[in-house]
Length: 413
Image (cartoon, rainbow, N blue to C red):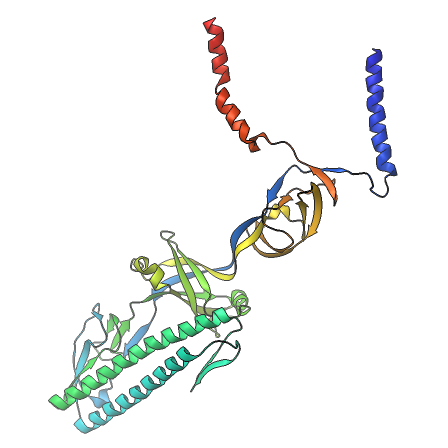
């Protein structure tokens, strides 16, 4: 009984002294412990910021073919709806009313196309030779065409490459048009009146006008792309990006969740439709044909998809769990066993992950649940977690099912 009273008195004295020390410690000279129950480590992660919208897969271009009744009388169609044509394939024939007028017209059109080819070749040559060293300068100014280099050199190189690719496609189409005109001139000089018009395009014949109402033929291009529309808010978000073109896009099909990569190739400045409520701005996305070649062959026009436009990206970003971020501060558990309140600068945020651009390093450990007992510079303690010890698994393996062994041992006796 006497010892019990002594123990109780000692406990009361111990508690009283600790309370007294806390009360008189106005300058925090006494070291206090902070108990950290949960923590996490700083890790590396690729992070992206997306703008999400919807789109539909469709053919990338449609070409209309016309017939001028003033040049002669229509003879016959040489294709039907559903036919696939290549550049140079015959489309229809007609009989010229006046040989000399037709000859002059074809010669004039040939000269016009040759001038356009020369202008395109000059543009390709100028752009190919241009070295991007001064972002912001005008790269090319040709007739009504004017191209500026964006501030980001990498984006400028991308736009340069896209420009050359588009011009090479345009050059191929104009050369096919020139071949068609030369073929018509040759046929006119040979027959004197009958002329066959050849296609300058490749694609699918979707419309044939038997009544000869223009357009007499419609050729749908075989190349697929994605068409979408952005509302005013999303259009303004993209306006903040340095360039409207070259933005990467992740395309996820509704039907089978197939993922494809694309690039924004056109973003309209004017709305396609507007109302008193909202305006919608057209956007086009082309697929990466080299990377997605086989998968593109299985696509069908009319398929719908979710689109995620990459606004910002940070590869190998220094990342923390958002639970470790308290405003713009974190509780860092340093190697000296001290808990340090540290200010940080944040970047991209995605789900439960936050990029830290300044304030932490990879591998550092952070407390994830802030507590009133946390103090800057205080010594911290953490609970002992047996699962973190490698010997625990070894002991468990050696003991195995000890209950079963214990019962068998008793029975054997």
